[in-house]
Length: 115
Image (cartoon, rainbow, N blue to C red):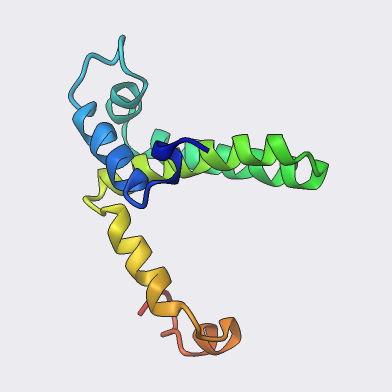
C-alpha cells in the first residue's frame, strides 16, 4: 500500500480536490459535471454505486468489492461536499460510536433520524 493510500488524511485530501473541481469546466471534470447536473444527479449516482457495491459483495469477488467501495466512497464525498460536510465530521461520528453496542446506539436514536 502506498503512503498516500495509508495516510490518515486521505479522505480530507480527496474532499479538498473534489471541492476544488466544483467550478471547473464540466467538459473537463467529472466532479464539475456532477455538480452542474445538480443534487438529484449526485444522489442518484450514490444510489447506483451502492447498488453496484451490493452486487459485488453478493458476487464475493474481493477486488470488485474494493473497486466498488472506492466508487461509493468517492460519490458520497461528492454529496457530502455539496452540503458543506467534511469527512472529519463523519469520522467524528464514527469515533463517537466506537465501543458502543450497535443495538444500544440504534435504540438511543431519536425517532425520525440522527441525534
